[in-house]
Image 1: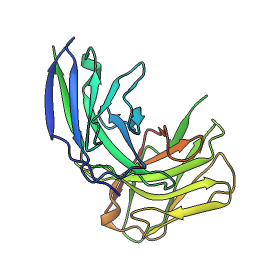
Image 2: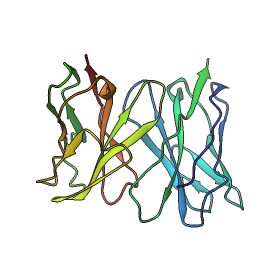
Image 3: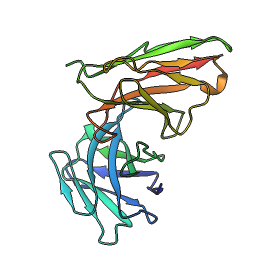
Image 4: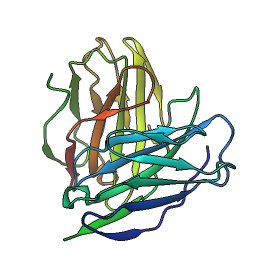
Length: 110
Length: 112
């Protein structure tokens, strides 16, 4: 399974876009990229996932580079409630295993 | 819908005791899984199930048993608790496969 590398922590001003990077240089062609977040010690919350095209939903946008070795999660207008740990995860299609790393701790500042 | 529920919220055990962590979902999801999260770490998959009667091991299965007799319930059994099993345990479910998993609130377990 491909592993992911994320910065340990980031700050973002409230109302600005939060751009969270993730490196997955060993990703294979059939591996999806998923993003989850964990607020305080709650259960993780699904945000978005993609294979090779950029994706957008009501929560965020996912930008995947053409070579698929990295991706960026974009929260377009960060709020204080977006303060959380964000996990970038890669999963092989047909398997049932996510490999969670330690994630990026995003702090949104007032 | 209540979503994914877990009981108990907190538990303290002594070394060698056994117990069952309960997980239930009311969304008719086929896929269910158990993770543990140690302090400052990401989640690690313990066991998962792709449907009633079918279970399989994840990344860290030793010391844990599971069964899936119904679609709704997926209990996790600690056979003989050890201090190394002190962790927060999360149950998750999804309609099919691990896509878009819904996580429960967690059970905080301390083994003395």
